Length: 259
Image (cartoon, rainbow, N blue to C red):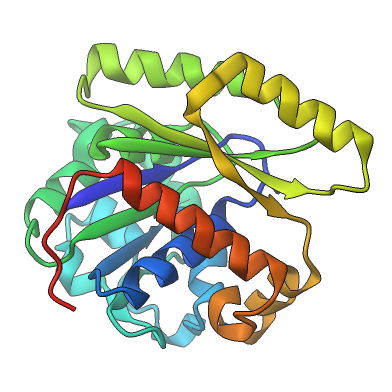
């Protein structure tokens, strides 16, 4: 199972939107996809239409009670796409994990127990670099970074890359950067183009060619409990995520998928 952590400690950069829509695009072509909601706000769970009443088992149980991932996963409205939802209990996990043995490897253990259940796992992280995100980075093979096309975009990226290097050195030498996805791109704004150019000059080929535009339909979709690709597959945001999915898949190890 390919494991991709979607992380950026800055909030509002499109992490959850990216995880949901990449997962939907992959499921649409036959991949068996698992999304793990590691954000206590539970936006990925809400965005995929999972009501709070249905979140009997959650990512908190995976981390703290060592429940099996397969027992906590819930099917979504998207065929072949499941999610381990988040609840408010997850907000206390950062503190509780401090005293737990092998606290950085709790998610790894859960996913190691279900290697053949899914083809790919996307881990949606909270906007911080605490123990939840560290668990996601230790468990993953690849890191995908959504980066907002705004003035302070690169400010927090250096800290994320520093944490990435520390995780590689101490816990997970196999972790690699899958790519940086530029989000909230506004072609009418000259600053947006300048930021995009700066990011590409700094990170080079790590930056995906596809940019995700600012798009009202992307913002509306979660309120309907649907990925944008299902809510309005013709909107510019959906088309961009489909193009991004093709790029992501092109960078992944080849898998033999039975549609």
